[in-house]
Image 1 (cartoon, rainbow, N blue to C red):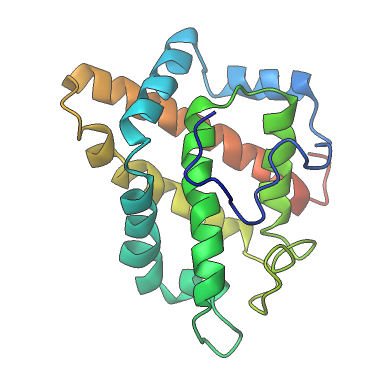
Image 2: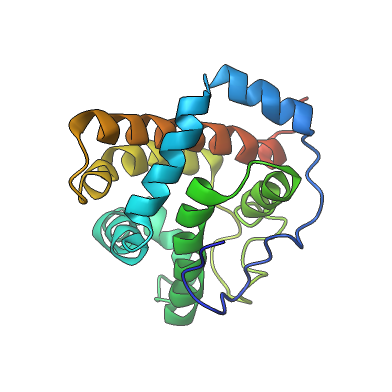
Length: 196
């Protein structure tokens, strides 16, 4: 498995708790987003294209976009609005690794478990604990859902950066978009008090 660094602080893939979402639920969600064998092929192609671009991509999202949106950047700062550079570095590496995991990891029980861990780290149950920081107590689900649109839109130039045909870029983008829709559906589970 490709990794962005030898050591990634707080990256517990394979050691996360067990997701309450079943593998059958995951298969049903894949059907709901229209996941196909072609999407599987093109998400891996997207990974090959993105594997040496994770840092500029994540920097674009964090420094180029999130940093200019007050209701988003506050979740990476102290309650007084002070920067948390150590947290930015550690969570940045995990964010980069998430790009690779999205593209390369099999969507199996370990992947499902780690999706639950990602979700919990944005809720009041686990936010700030991994890195021992003092920031906002949670990231509202509405902000996560809304930012998925930005991530889907802004990744396209990165997918096109290696000279693939327009058709291949579109298929990689489609697979990426479906995967993010699938993931945000999974991330919603810990936020819901209703039957998920």
